[in-house]
Image (cartoon, rainbow over all chains, first blue to last red; front, side, top):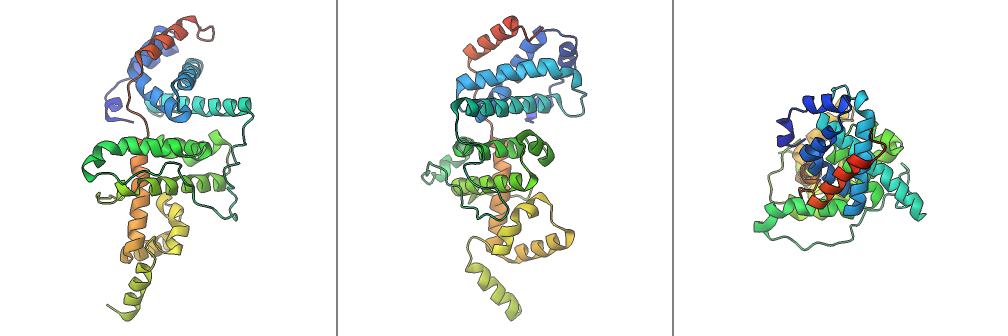
Length: 205
Length: 95
């Protein structure tokens, strides 16, 4: 994921986890905890819930390490496990609060009209000088203002870069519903971040 | 430049958010899901329509900066580290 992660050789850590060495979990926290916390925080938006997600993720990592074959980077795998724990925690929370269903924010039907998503906070136009430093903060703030189903789609697909098929599997959404949700979320983010997109060199990805 | 092309540009400029066809196909275009023929046609149009080019580029850049800046860079609070250590030591699921 990050440049720092690319230089870390996790092979010994994975081996120790597979040998059921519990102290390896502490090392995992030491090395990758900050990024895991970032993932958990973006899902849950508060420290206390993020802690629960990290605990669930640790249990999942411990239980599933045997199935990690090293086909993807270990870092990607643990962040994916953390994202999955976040998704599960959001579902559990929703059930507990007897809240609106995941689809209540808007219809994802192909034929249904798609009203533009509005983020709650209308940000002032940024000072050009402060743009670069603020960009990350503004991006994260815009993501966190997305209604939950849209935030989840963006976090799994655009932040974590999971394949569409995997996001469909994780969220239980049909392909059409996921595409619609993701597209609307991206448009809302684009709208919110437009002042930051202008005046920058835009490269094709 | 032909009259048809000039008219095309003028039409595009009247739609500052990009043309409706581009908007409709934007997701599939960016995800590379269009047929090669449709992709090529749309790419050609975008190349000659500044509002569409801006629109597509800003959409792509949104995805790019979302990926690069989507996760907080704040360090984990030390108290949380301690709590997780405690959790690792005491949780019966971690045997």
